[in-house]
Length: 351
Image (cartoon, rainbow, N blue to C red):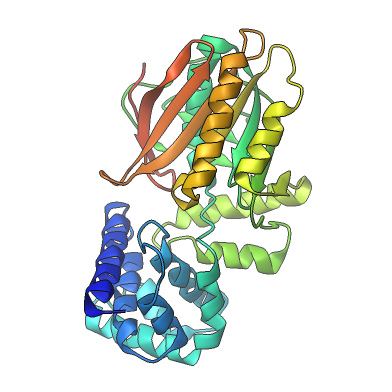
């Protein structure tokens, strides 16, 4: 790989770091920038970065090793990272040196973290989904069957068990240990009834929240600047241990096509949902899912509607956009709002 390719990789990693800064995660950004220097070393991790076969930003490659490093810190395996995560060290050259030493000493252990994209299934994103369901309720009815693509650990497949305060609009069980109350910008979402009849999910590599070691690895992907996310993750784990999420191990396109062929209950809207997953899918998979949804949409009726709700990254603006299509009647995508990548705030456009 020539020097231009190496610079392209470095540029993608700088883009990821900037994305973290814009989402209030400067420490995570500094950990990512420290990984650029690893390309000049002889560790397996450094050479994996240097020879990355795809696009670092689109693949979220820097966040893969970032998760592994944070996992070492959280599990008490690596004390040298503590001053970085604690904000005691902010000089980038000093951070580069510490990260290089840690990677060298844990090279073989950290290498497998590159194998899969970060599992950032975040319950805070369900605030946008609930707002979207409130909006849909007034248009096509209050009862929903949810299908989550790329459900990871199934955190958002449990959203009917969460309590929401969306700028004063309340939804979900009042006694839930999961409290979702993002900073709200713009008008409140509609006040409308919402009943989630069922929720199913799929992922190529589902994560079992009820397994302690697996849950610990999932926490590694949480950005350390965001303690509220750790609290929500603990609530998710507790709820999963009461009643585990339904997440099938399956290819996304295969699963969506199969789900759309199943009988649909009268008076219930079938909704495909996904958040920060579309960027990881091959184009052929995206095309199959789009084709399947549009074909099913043509057959949708007022008694058996279909909707598609996504919270995905606009790569041109780095904003995360809530977009909904529904059939019959709302085939054109509607941009309802934007949200923080991990649910800290929601900017709502619709009244």
